[in-house]
Length: 173
Image 1 (cartoon, rainbow, N blue to C red):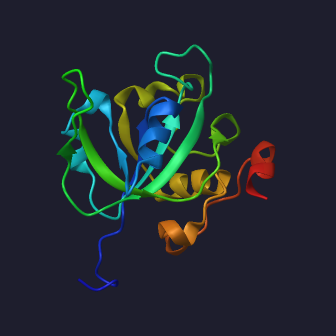
Image 2 (image 1 turned 90 degrees about the vertical axis):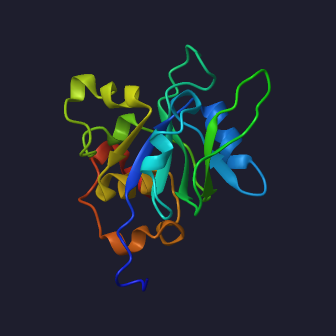
């Protein structure tokens, strides 16, 4: 399939504590993702080339801190979801992801600019799904806030989003 006929990548937000997201990001030789307590079904919705960003409500699983930040960002790799034995009878499904260099970015300055936020008072509702699709415009805003290289993600060809809200401009410098 040529680049001209390749399907447009879909963009996803996955939810996990920062420690778990970083464990997947730092795994060698290739990073991985797990969602929804290791279920395979949600991972089957993703395709190679899709973009995924992890949102972490807290630093540790069940933690009371309010990290509320995007913590890792990458591209789904070819292959199907597979299971990995983590011990103690826990054998979650994973999907390989090539993570790119990015800095954590808080969600608060982006809330008014993100299209997936339908109700500012209840902005966190969608995160309960554990994995959900977002418009490419939102992914580009998040990637910029994380100071990620848009070319490394293939975002440079997705177009320029509208200007970010004034209170988040320092994140884009």
